Image (cartoon, rainbow, N blue to C red):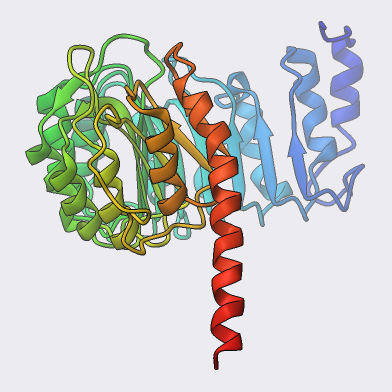
Length: 388
C-alpha cells in the first residue's frame, strides 16, 4: 500500500511546533518505529519523539539527512537505534555520538568511515549490527585499534565473504565480546580457518555463521573446527556456511571441549558422502553436554551396533523435543526408534530433508516406545519404594 500524499508546506509547518522545549504529541512514548519513507513525512518525525524515548527505528534514507542531527537532543536517553535497509550505499549517521546512553545500534547497511568512528566512541555500546564491504578503506580512514568498542558484547556482521569480517575482528581487541553472528555469501575453507583462528582468542558464548545461498558448501576438516576448542564457555555453535568432516570420536572431542553447549547446529555431510556420525556417536555428545536443548546435525543410521535395551548406558537428555537431521540415511527403522527412545525420551518431532518416509516412521514409533519406557520407569520407581 502506497503512502498517502502529504502537502510539503503543511508538514513543515507541523514540524515547527516541536523544539527542545516544546512537548511531543506522545510524551510517554518509549518505542517508535517510523516506516514512512516519503520525503514530506520526514518533517513529522520530531513531533512524536519524546524525552522518554528509549528505542528508535527509522528508514535508511533518513540516516544521512541534515535534520537528523536535531533528533538526539529530543531523546537524550535513547538506548536502541535501528536503521532499516541493507544496501551498499553508505550512510553517515552524523548524530550517533550524541547519545551517551546508546547500548544497541542496528545498522545492517554500509556505513561511512566517519559513522563507524562515531559508533566506536559510544561509551556504553554493547551490541552492534553492521555490514562490511571494504574493511581496509575503513581502517585506513578512521584508525580503528584495540581501544575501539571497549564494552562491545555482541556483534552481527553482514559481508560478501568471511575475509572482511576476519580483518575487522583481527584489528580490534574487543575484550568483552561474547556473541558473534556473521551473515555471508561465500565461505572458502581457508577463510573459515582464518576466522576460527581469530575467534578462539575471545571468551565467546555464541558463534553463528549463516548463508542463505543454496550453492554446495565446502567441506572443512576437523582440524579447522578444533581451533574453536579453546572456547570452553561456548553455549551455541550454529554454522551452515560449510560442512565438517566429523566422525564419532570427533563429535566426542567437540562435546568435551564445549561442556556448556546448549545449541549445536552444524552440517556433517557432503554432497558426495553421508555423515560419518552414527547413532552411537550421539551418546557421548549428550553425556558431556547435558544442557543441550537444540540439536541439528547429520547422522548415518544405516548400521546400528547390537545393544541391549539401554544403548545409552544411562545417558538421557530430556531437554530436546525436536530432532533435526539433514540428509541422514537410515536402515532399520524399529532399531533406530528403539535407540533414540533410550537417549532422547522427550523427542516428539523429527525433521529430515530427504523424501524418505523412514524418519517419519521413526517419529511415530518413538511415541510408542517413549510411552512404554515412561511406564516402565514409573513401575520401577514404585517397586523401589515398596521394597524400602
